[in-house]
Image (cartoon, rainbow, N blue to C red):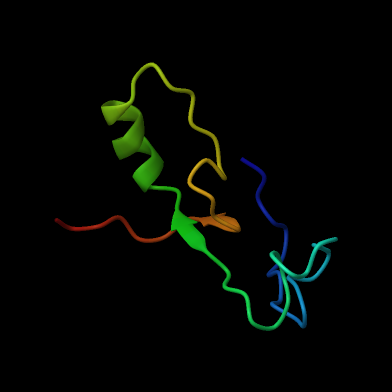
Length: 71
């Protein structure tokens, strides 16, 4: 996993330093940014032991570290 050394601002039309070629389907003002908690990868790895999971496997724009879920 690559960790950002600084906050990466969400600019217009993309995340800073993350340019997209085809703005009809990726990036742009009307597109979502999908963040997925890195903590959930361990749960999925238990469910899918024969699969190598890496950040981005669930289609997220960014894999983030959040507080662990309680339930």
